[in-house]
Every structure is written in C-alpha cells, then in structure tokens.
Length: 334
Picture: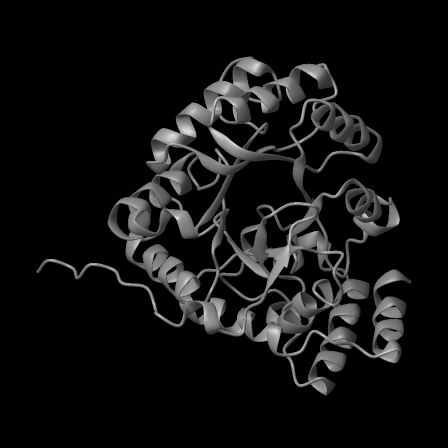
C-alpha cells in the first residue's frame, strides 16, 4: 500500500506555541524546538521518527536541531531527517529552520573532530548530503576548541555563510571569554552570530551564573537551551528510583551515580511545586526556562508523539510567582 502524501495541519500557526525574536535579527523561533539527538537514529523506526516530526510541524514547531554525530549511530539522525525531507517536508522547506553542528567526534583520524577548517567544511558538506539539503539555516561550531586558533574557526564560519551553505552561524558551549572573541570576529566581517546554544536547566545554571545569557543579549545574539530536563532527571521518571529501561538504567550519558539521595529529594520537592501549579515536573522545568525573554527557544528531545504532546503543555503556564521562584532556587541552588 502506498503511503499518503503528507499534508501539514492548516492551523499549525494558530496553535499554542509562540515565536520569539532571535537576538537582533529577522528570525523568529518557536518557543519549543525539536532536537534529534536521540530517537531519530538508525536504532529507531522511521515510522516513529516521522510521526514525531509530523506532529511537531503540525503544532507549530518549525525548528529542527541536529548535529553531524547525532544518532546513534553517527550521522544516522541526519539520514533520517534527509528521508523526512524527501518524503514529507521538501514542499515546506521555506517554513523550516534547520540546524546542524560539527566539532565533536565524528570519524577516525586527526580531522574527524574539533574546529579546524578542514573538519568543519568537510562535515557540513557531508551533512548537507545526508539531509538532502542545499543549505542549512544555521551551522554551529559545536564546542570550543582550545588548540585550533579561534580565527581559523570563525573565518570558516564566515566563509560557509558566504558560500551559501548556511544562512546563519552560531556557537555552542563556548566559555565566556572565547564567546566574546567569536562575537567580535564575526561582527567585524558582517556575519552576525545568530545563536548561542548552551546547556541550561533548573539544575544547571552556568549560563546565568557565568554571564553567558547577559553576554548573548548584549551582543544581539539569541540563546537556545538544550538538555532542559537534565536528560530526564527533571521528570517524574526518577521520583522513586531508577526504573528498568530508563536512560539511567543503561548507565550511558546519564550515570546512575547522578541520582544521589540529595538529588532525589530535590526532584521530589520540585515535583510538589509542579503539582501545586497543575503541571508535571517536566512541564514546569520547560516553563521555567521560558519564564522571561532571556531564552529564545528550548530544544526538547522526544521518544514518542505522546511525550512530545505532553511537553508542549508546558506552554499553557510559563508564569511564576516570586514565591515560587524563590522556593525553586532554594531547592536547586542549596
């Protein structure tokens, strides 16, 4: 049986999701973006990936966030997205904002990671082929490279824009001093840094504590948060220990030793606040990131349409009282 041609929901821009201006630019990003780090690789079924991507776009999510080594295995998330472009999204390419990145481990040898011109150029060319794209909307330097001259990395980003392979560029996880130099180098060459992507959640406050949020704002750069649920810690999944089949049970990127007795107590106390607000813990954690304009968008992962639908409920209430914020900070920062 031939599957029907995808036709997105006609009301996709009349959903609950709002769009925020990305720094000093013409770009508007959805408050919630879909990340393809996990659950879109070759270990997952295409039908489930397709269902999630369709649901996201049908509900106003226009931004899909990828990287060269997303999967697993490396490159397979981009290959999945390439199939989605071919089967579903090609007629709607101009409605989508698609990102990819390079800088982490991707292929063997000295040119398969970090921020040399050779690696960044080669990686983006490979990514475009995998995704069936002529260009990406934004290309990131995925991490700061302390050994490659910053000028080499930034000039590569400038050249990528001038070659038309990316409309915008961004940086991810750069320390504040290096970010400042990157912003200035790009601006002096008329290539504005559109986005800073950083790990930010209730438990990880580094972007605010180190001044990265304020720095981005002053530079006219948007800030987009990843790992908003601390890889699942900020959900009800670990309220009573480590459930079988969870990410922590596999002891991969989320280690079992991270769920200390103190951490579990914090999760339970935060869950109590969320319940008083009429939200799940995950909904409240996402809403907290969107409580003000310092965050342009929040990247969420998803393993099912149901999970994606539940996370979008966070947008129903992103307001916090002063008392709630004080109580949350007391729990998270003590």
